[in-house]
Length: 460
Ligand code: FAD
Ligand code: NDP
Image 1: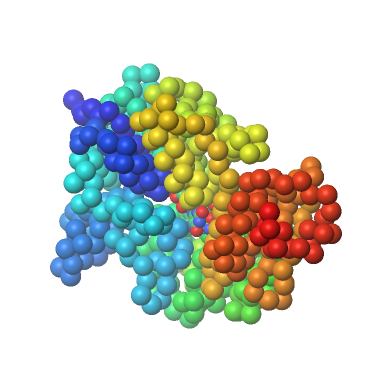
Image 2: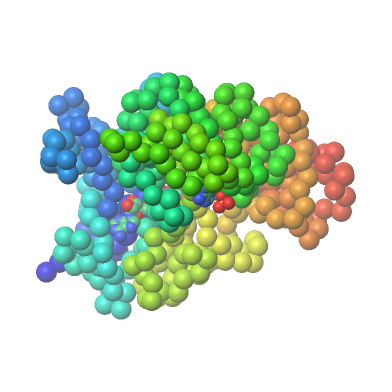
């Protein structure tokens, strides 16, 4: 027994939301599309204050595992980037339904009502535990078999756990990860419990930097610990990193670099009280936030689909090694034409655009070309806002005023400009940077490029 759909999206995150919107634009009929997602969060029952439909979540009254009353909230797709930014603000924090997809791209906001009106079946709070791509079926954790003609895999990724690096203690009540709404609610609870306290942030990547900024805004004292010589080591040059670290320092953030966590001190209540580092030092802690990278959720497809770069390999139409199965978002390894190689990106813009492209390839194959994507990453912390386009390979040319508000860099590889970074630009500056990077102009004189700085992109 089970249900059958023409199209099934497995996963209910960013890519799923953008795919759903695109399906409706391309004329999907009611009853043809289903989204299956396991995301839930448990919280104090709120519908006495506001009806669940207005909160933009689907609420079911339940007992939780600790036998207290509350609500299990089944969450339709939302803009995940909000969780490290607006969601953690001490005043007027962002809450659903304000950031359901697809508001991040200035498109329609898809509330539960929207899915209902479009005849899109939301199977929420439901984990898919196996998939048979030969039979075109999925089996859910509650034992339902759902069949499809076309499957879009949008399972995203999971946060890496400290245990995978040989450290135990992730389940302590004041240790937080941040991947989904349930995690974000925990971070908010822990922040409120330890106002004015000490936080140790493990990891100097995106989660680490964005959470540290939000914690400081909440008047928490922050120490960041990471193994590299500077923050955001996968993207930033030492000079760019030093610019941001200087500001974080001025806000009271301490950096402990070149070492990793070795163990936690945990009290008799199961709370972490201090973090011990491999360099022998010990940091007192009221709370810990861990952001040490992710792993794409590919396990359902291992042995069934071709994998590459840790993700599911797709062609320029987002189609996997099985013709009826597409993959999008964090889990997809797709050909980046501009650089002639397959890449897996972990950013929201590529999730949105790969999703849209897959739906085009499914619904209007003759009108859909090979995906041609310019990698784009961004972040916003404190009053900073930066954007990056392309590839951070080769020689770097910095420009701008590194003691001021606008800084930038170009990356030059094999005589061509392949990557660009800008903090504090205008909309026009960023558009010029994106356009220039996509053109990959030949650079004969690096000194001249340095002198021209942003002006180079503005005149190309
Ligand atoms: P996700 O959004 O992770 O969605 C995956 C979905 O699949 C989830 O709903 C999950 O529950 C579901 N799922 C997985 N396995 C199963 C299963 N077996 N059964 C049922 N459901 C399943 N990127 C930026 O470019 N800029 C930012 O500022 C930014 N901020 C971020 C902040 C945070 C806190 C996080 C975690 C990420 C941020 N990112 C940002 C990255 C961006 O959010 C991701 O690249 C994007 O969410 C990927 O979309 P996705 O749909 O592929 O995966
Ligand atoms: P990142 O890969 O950005 O950063 C992980 C950091 O943790 C790196 O500094 C890494 O060092 C370090 N690290 C790895 N292992 C350890 C360890 N054992 N102890 C201490 N540090 C360690 O991942 P995040 O967790 O920060 O982010 C998760 C995902 O969320 C990513 O996909 C990211 O793209 C996404 N995200 C994106 C945002 C954006 O685009 N603005 C914002 C927030 C999240 P090393 O490099 O040496 O491994």
